[in-house]
Length: 218
Image (cartoon, rainbow, N blue to C red; front, top):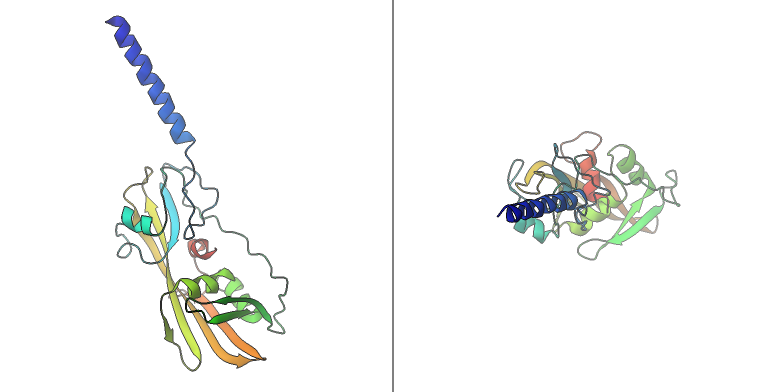
């Protein structure tokens, strides 16, 4: 009987060590097209925090279900993300020349319409609103609708959400939501379209929070 008890204690000790090792070496939260947190780290006090695009929960403070996260392709691994967003550095476009307002980037929006981004709007998006050239691209491609914004301009909107779970990856809640707006003018300009006019965070005069850029920087 004493041998059996000693054996059981040894087994439990090995199990505890294995569990601790598994938690210490857990793989970082799976990155998806909606989650750009690079090099996440464990922080027991902060829990798991990440940025996502699209509608999740029902406003700030609401629960985000496992089903919603699964639909966004996000898998939360316990203890593997910190509250400090990792924001990629903005590379300088090789053709940047604000004085001439030349075209830097081209892409198609969600409806297959070509959008261009010129150097002058890019400077404003980067320096005034703390966003990147990826922002108007992601917003115009991920938004499901667009609305007229006067004349030949159209408005696209997309929500960026900051979600926080407990250390174990449970009880996920929306802690911040910011809507990002992009205005695109399709008028003729210099033998092309004018393109993106601006991209900014609604209700914020100036720089967007870093978590917004983290969600949109794809």
